Image (cartoon, rainbow, N blue to C red; front, side, top):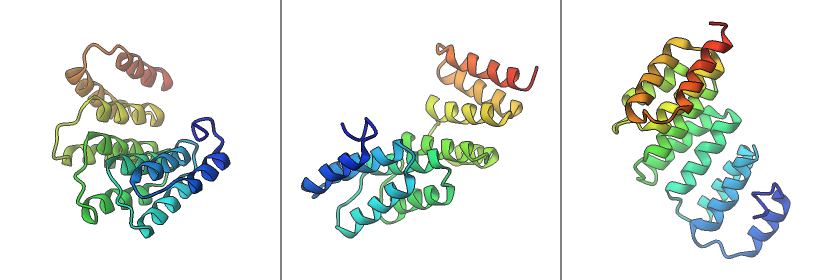
Length: 175
């Protein structure tokens, strides 16, 4: 609760008082720091978690990837994704893929984001295409944005927000 309210010092004090034998308290504190733009602290906590011998899970890596995405830490995010797969044998789920696409897209690596989607071993869902479309809006890439919106409409045609997002791309560049 402290973390959600932005009281990270209070959240850390409480964190150090509770048992940390499972990933649950670690996930909570990592997520709190990531949400509030403190990705480096989230990564530091992840290193501490590993040193304590606590095994991370899907939620841990979603929190880390999201933190890296919000803070523009592309290399660190790629490292987390690789550690998740190679060291912990955790197979990515769509939320992990969505975080990676969001991370590449926010950083302006739209081609890398698109290639990442093409190389995914699972079919992208609306959240993955939405992350790419959002990045196209931020960076003004109409062609890739149109492609992403077409894919979005194929998987979720009833969400009018995607139409609004695409129209915003055109509006931002004056078309």
